[in-house]
Length: 180
Image 1 (cartoon, rainbow, N blue to C red):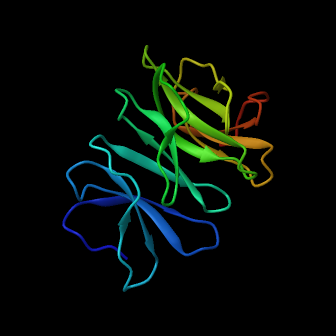
Image 2: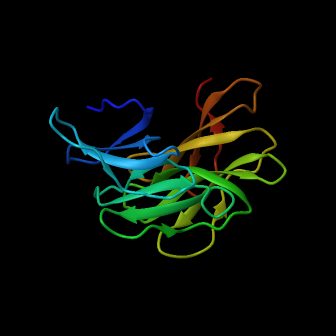
């Protein structure tokens, strides 16, 4: 679908539309692009920051893209609807990345690397509110993804010495190793 001398990576499908979001370094830094999944399609830049924009994730309706950007000095989660201005939704107490939309589009789960270097999963009510910490473990917890019914979040953790898949309720309770 893409053919460019700059690297293109991190593809993310929009639900039911045939659009792909991806990251490209076509202008020297990482920006978010979208393209129709066809041979004659042309990639269009969605973000145009001089800093890196990475980790695109489409909202369930395929209208808005959440992404991580270091344009404010550390990585925060931003959102952009196609053709609209980007808007920051987290304000760093570390670095926020790997956003994942809840199936109803009301929440974002994401990974936060705190200033002490620890990685945990947080969630945020889309449209306002403070980020809520869901995991609190000295191990690395990252890569959140919602269950189709929005009741659970799967994530990766190295709590047992290996990287395994863990599950928890959407409010952070009931954390258990799913890989065992």
